[in-house]
Image 1 (cartoon, rainbow, N blue to C red):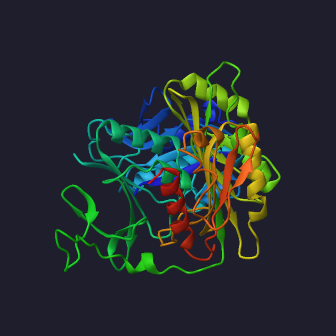
Image 2 (tube, one colour):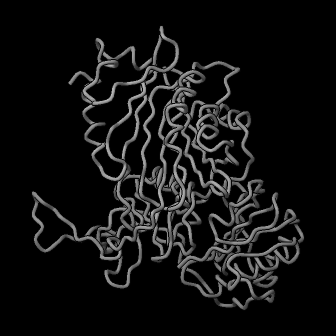
Image 3 (tube, helix red, strand yellow):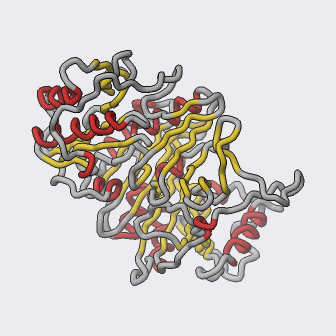
Length: 472
């Protein structure tokens, strides 16, 4: 299994410190670069990579190493340098560990995981070789077949790192799926979940009883025909191709923890003075009393919250769409994924935001209507849906069944109201009448959904409302 080793240092690794780390395999070890120079590789005698080292990343957001690694981090700002060892080569893992240990020693800091970084000595690698790298494979990819790229990962949280994003793009460009294989104790960042492509892409979890299962659906998996695919149940038919679910996936334990999930969309007229991220900050402040802590184009989120800088990045990448991750403070776990795209209607922001609450914490449900009012009056809101989920406070996705959320409220923006035929936006089949928001001449509507937050009855109300608004 591929090993990731990460140095967390107070100082930016200087060239001398990086060189000392690269010499962990001895002075005759080959060095190469890839990714336009952003990745340095220690190679075997034939030039095949044993260890791939990412360019150091300056992290200015507190808590990211704790959230993604469970590690104690230096005070911000600190530098995050990743090294990935080749699959199935013990010497490569020791090389990566020694590289990170030397970097931490010379630049002040620590390395994760500690057990991989106990030695500063030269690692004996004479005669060590690795399997040939498949054509067009990314450094992160462990197995490449005509159908899928497989990444085998051993870290506590699968995060949307820059190298994982590169692997996703490469797999999509080659029309392959991406399958991520992890031990049973690993969790998934919501940012990865938001970017996971459809079948045959999967999160593959190792399991003592079943061998492998899908961490998102629970389907028992086997390696067959060049990829991990679902096993058919003994009584499956073409009309009912059922798949057995792993027992581990069904062993959910209720902790009383919950998540408040807000999904919304805004469309801005395109102009040079436009600043993005304001709608997200408005929701964050209304529900937590504080702005987001940080953002980035990958995880860890490394930049302090700044709508201005976020806008600059989105504009620089236009007309291509841009994806961001936004995180909150340690005290109130929060994570949002933001997709910004240029459309015929203008500049569109699509946001999914979640906050986590413990069993003894109450989500601010009484603030939902005020949040909707703030969005409608200050931003060009198109629609918003609020749900409550029985799920982890830390927002991480476990390989267990957590169940869907329950819809609490839906908001239809003023522009969308104008497209609803007749008086349907005001007169609905719900027991509770909608609430007008914003200017009287161009109102938006807030629809409280009367479903009990403890069950799924709210979905029936939501679906009935959607059919009504569409005139069905």
